[in-house]
Image 1 (cartoon, rainbow, N blue to C red):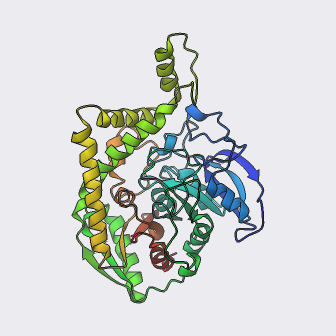
Image 2 (image 1 turned 120 degrees about the horizontal axis):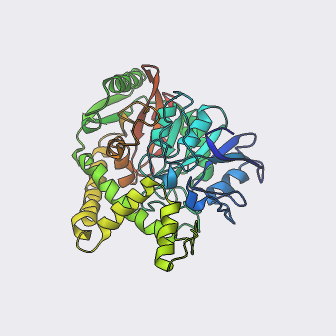
Image 3 (image 1 turned 120 degrees about the vertical axis):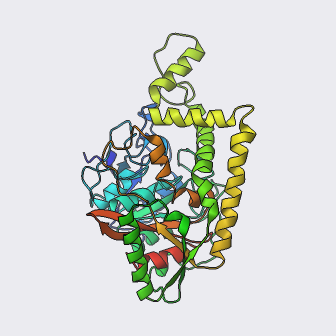
Length: 421
């Protein structure tokens, strides 16, 4: 079995539609009726959902054939797809290196030609990071555009389901299928524009204005930055223009993100105690010992680290010091993005400031992996849409460029991205 998948299967389409004849891979934290959905964790190793997530129902109704559930970092917590209980996934575009995370299996499946399309989830860059590392297209929608019903929660206020594809047009066609209100997810909203997303993938950037936040270039690898500017020069030659913009709030984003995300994770994962949900240990102690042993056995090291961080941030005496300040920073970041996006059509930056890590390179230094998310997490805190498209290679390794639009500005980022891929 390919290491891009935890479970290979074949679920036939329910009807004919715009995705007829196409295959699609589904990240293993999105529920599929009758097919186990593990979140790449021992805790849910044997869990078989009794229902389909809304996005799964929609792609089946649109004619797609589901070919498997893809590998991921455990419960979506990671940047490399190496924290999976089922082992790591290799990067088809850069063998020996990680595919990025946490949706690394979905990106790898598309990059390797094992699926035409894939679905992932993006909490702090978990679609855009692996898209950049594997040289494919990944799109994180505006918060509320795509239903999260059936997505096993990590951090509810940040995560969105989104598409992977080899081209921007294909990703936009999949977004057309999965987007839209869902009565089972009260956070979903109708897009104010009725034009299809795929029709926006015309590559016409004449007159488009692009802002480049200088803070998102600081500290990036020199070859990554050079490839990024080459991509912007290509857009400029097609009629776009770009200017540097100031976005000072993003310097607080990584810290705010990890406080908010881990706090929500500590709450969401409290249900997995071996009695209500998840792996049960064979402990013969009292209920407290049994709960503790089940969680000790069922969760990996990165999940335990984030639960402890979140529990600490929410604990009595520290809530105002950490969680409240993180929420204040989030509000500042949203205002900052709204300000600069009132002057330009989209923002652009390298998706990842570094090249794909060699396998095992970052596992002993989780802080360096957290900092690698610096260009992607601000977008989740601001609830905005963003796309990562291939910008070329440097030293033989893929480099992605990220375009960020205003809320429900998916068509703007699709249009600019389609000029490159």
